[in-house]
Length: 621
Image (spheres, rainbow, N blue to C red):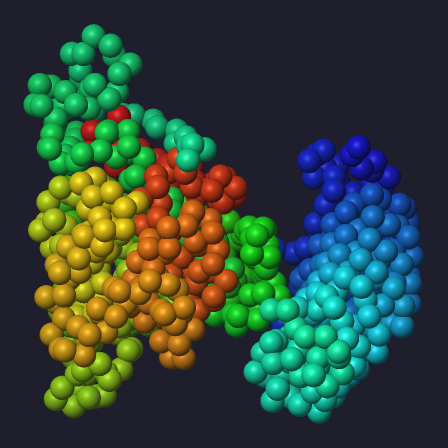
């Protein structure tokens, strides 16, 4: 039964009645102002009186990013059914003693406040499972905190604590304890800085007696076909028949001008609809991987385990912090933006891949993002892209500028020779995602695929390792679309990897680079990629190793991407590339529906127009 509204807030739809969202939407600039305590007129300084003065049946409430200094004592009585409460990024200094009356509360987020102490009644929250009170000013915790029957995840990092409750050592439920950046003496801060596992192990050993326990298609793409084909097939509804007819050169010449990327008849062994499904699967596989991957980017493994449930990970779970606040939940990030830039270039120039045209698009995106999606600037975390596009002559000679910056870097760090010990300054993963789309337009011509990958990669990244990875990925995508090897058969998958890697290896000019490249090409699991390697999380080889390991794992898309994302590192890039290859392998129809439909609708509509244009140019049904 839906909630009965008894306050005078704006009416909500039936499907929204379980949640009350009073959170203030902030962009990155607003986030920085908020954490620096700059006052905003848009912020609430107290809860609306209509909530405090009447009973509501909401089960979830989010009032984050406001300036509320205190909560009214009667709040638990007015919201008796709350099981989720987000009070983060406010100005709370104390909690009322009545706070313990939130008997149904399971998740409580109170990070980034000014709390110095929790009320004694706090341990009466008998159903509490997850507690985040990081970034406060707490000097002590309730001594019975570990006796809370269901508490399993606790984040008390960035406080002023000197001790953790002894009761945590006897807890049977506790599985994650984050306690970095405190003043701890017991356990020693050095132990807590080593992560949750070491912290719990210490607590258990010293205070506890127990040890620590550590395809049917489901999606259908809405194809909107242009008028590029004029078929003489009697059955005008048979798009597949039109496609095959066009390949045999029996249609009007003007129609072929509208299908410059129409593949020859023997280009693939896939049926037309299966080829189309793989192309769309590649595109949306990359978008989903990027959008869900941002959830854990640059977190520690402990933070990943604290903030997210592996089995239920979704866009709405993505925490809003200094890094992630740049994107709205369900939005892709920089990686897929790069992918779309190349897709736009292909569409705009009728399939011709030109580095000068792409350079103009990259520069415009870096300055303004995609204004039609509400962007005001491009968010380029690639140091290489940022430096390259800001060179005065970039638009006229992108390859020369890219090469010049690389030589300058080598001269400064290595003298006369550059080997594997070179600076990684211009060897980041910023150009990796864009290489994926280059495997689509002329997939039947591997030599042209290779040249296009080099042409676009060099528009910002000239390091031989970047070129090799770009070629490897583009050629592998083309092989998937040719359909001559069944990637579900391990021996055929390895054949495809061998063809693509042999094509890419010739761009590596040192033995050390070649040895390293082969290592990542042969990775069979994510752990061997070492995605959190210090100083190399955004190294160009990492997403390649992840993608090939993901293919070899033979798991479904969701499980494979979730496992990867929960390892953190440069997770959105790794998941974008891995998701693209997995999506191309299984097709759009087999992507996880919840992740697909959870993408932002404005972006999806915008992207679908581009996909349909590409399919029109290929003459696809």
